[in-house]
Image (cartoon, rainbow, N blue to C red):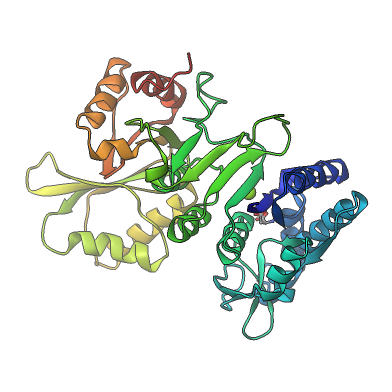
Length: 413
Ligand code: ASP
Ligand code: MG
């Protein structure tokens, strides 16, 4: 007998038919003799609607009241799912964050989980009851309802799995697993049977939207085995139809490159002819940090005049205009000097990811060569131990992804 946490995302509980489907997924695990705790998201679109309601009262709403409002989406689905389970003769009940309680800090709208009370849940699981837990929400030490940030239903599920020492955390979503790259762009993309935490973390933070990044971090720290799978398809007979996110040790045959991610959310800023002296980088990135603008890739070149330097970096597209005005402001106030600023949002970041890179040379070189053969210019490069990222013009996204997928031998036969 295993203990499994099953998490159903917004699309899996989008309407009553789907909630009934979900109840059968839960029953299937119970029929296999497992203990099951369920974590649910709000119905697809529900959270957005609740946020709109808050904004329509006041654009500067109180974040404590925002949490009171947006947490209700998960209350609805927890109740409905418990009812659907009861209809199948299963002993189920709903649990809201405050009832467990899932204790958080009081940073409303992006609270962090501090601890989870499990005694009562343990007792009921042992008695065969199925707790249906509202994801996304908790209770602050001031006694108020908190929420954990957008998409944090995954985080709630992984945290519950860690607290309950579950054997597995199954995350049901609208895709049936983690793919080598986006199958909507590369038709030869393959579903992975296993991927390491580190690779999944890089994939998630580099633009693949299957799992929330923080949830992967938490799973890695607590060694929670995650399975990503779809609640829409029925794969009779296979006990593990999705992708397992696990420790490196569980993966026998490791590919050098496991996956390729892309992010269209990047924008490039170039400062021409910045004085090349100590403190310039601090003078550029200090004001951006103060404005809470995250900088991702950075390159510094010698400018054509040989005396100054050109500085290029990327920010998220949403921050581009603000980044430019912050840097113009810094120049006007004499904190910084440069000749010209160029903003470019027609870029995409491509990242090849794989733990096998640690022990194999030449991975980056293959990427550069493949892109060169397609005539694609690389604008910025950055690397980490298990990742190589390049910035190229956005128009080349499809062409580049397909070329890289082939070069690293990831194409399905
Ligand atoms: N309902 C929340 C959201 O839409 C949490 C989640 O679904 O993961 O952000
Ligand atoms: Mg989600």
